[in-house]
Length: 188
Image 1 (cartoon, one colour):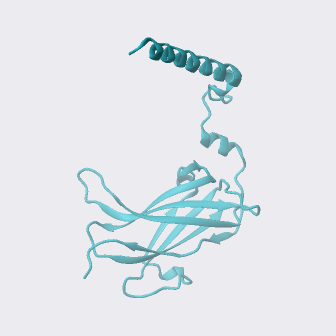
Image 2 (cartoon, one colour):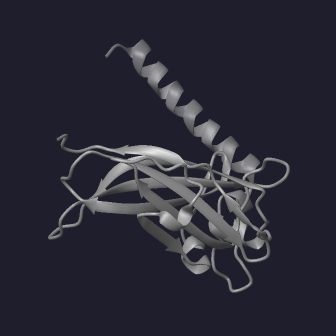
Image 3 (cartoon, helix red, strand yellow):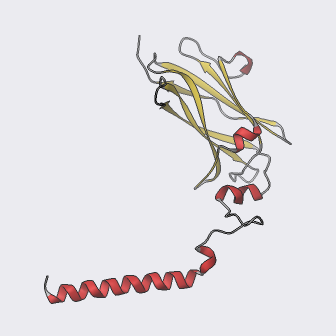
């Protein structure tokens, strides 16, 4: 390496160290360490949302994704991952408290319109305590991630319709849009 390149490298290292020093001195110590609550424990993102009051949703949106759950020593399970967002009257994603139920219909050989949830082939219920544990913060705001197991893998290809409903502790039942999702598998 020639002396000119060594000088440039030393200068760049000096600039990087100076930039780090300026960044840390301008942000202050409070932003480098998580805030502590009244018990002296560090607050997490969940604590931040939990401190806000739960709101009563006006609508919900769900995105479903096919997946296989595997656990050592057990047969793989086919199913769907769901990401749920609940919105207030201002269309803001909000934290909620209540019970989620997802109704599943096997539409492989028949077709449901989703209006009669009593005829569901499967029903998945999340109590308020279970559901709040599925909270996660996303770029869009408060969201919840759930897993809906359907059957053992491998299996036949199926067409599944999923219909979510949510009952707030202090509000009405709201119903998300029904979605038909393909469960990949063997074809007859």
